[in-house]
Length: 304
Image 1: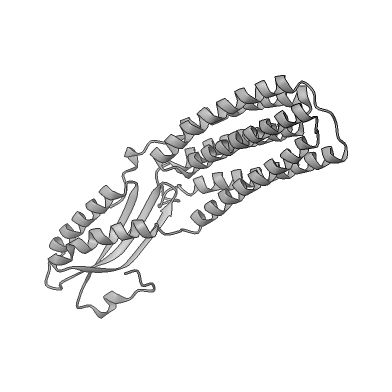
Image 2: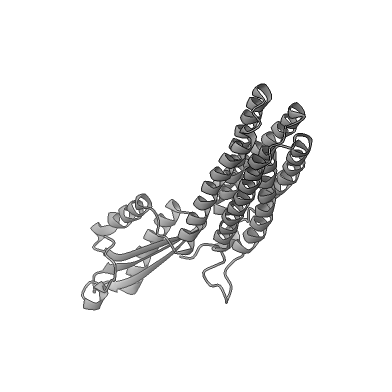
């Protein structure tokens, strides 16, 4: 059973929320940096620039990923999503390095901050935009099972949290005149987004390595197949992999040698449909084998 791609809609248009939000937040945060000369606000603006680049890459990759299979790519283009989050993770780390350099330079060459109230107002507006956008992207990321939208949403949420931290630090500077707090906060922000970037890179790498479905998902698939054992069948060689929003599930179905191909195939179709009902966006491949064939049990992994 091959998933019908006509039923699947691309969520690429949703990424426009992220792109528009990034343009707005870059503008607001750049103004906040300009009026205050705070490296904390500078680090925030740099992260929003990464959001914009990541949003554009995400849009392009989603357009590719949701194209149906063709002769050159018979298993589809879904892995393009992993390249998107891999690029985003790498860009985040590059931004963190830039933020760290700017913060260390400010520690060496301190400057007093100015117009903190005005800067905080612009920063708060930018944070609200990111918060709303992140919630929209996360909702649609879960709806479409898109790692790209989820990665973008979680990056924006990280941006929201770091901005809140920066604002708290700026408040401390405002009431204490400890200007050293500003670059120290920027360094903390840099370390925080390095962690986010590494998580995206690791998750993308695992996806490119054809990671299997989770143990819980495998358990449900096995339960479905094993319910049909009462009809005289068995199975082995259950292999799965997850590619972005799609699942690939294959196994060998063992049946009595005196069964007709038609009878075996009809039972296989029932099992396919039940698994497909539990896991949308799945390609299911079942190889039929008779019990009395000694080569039917050749298997390089034990999955049962």
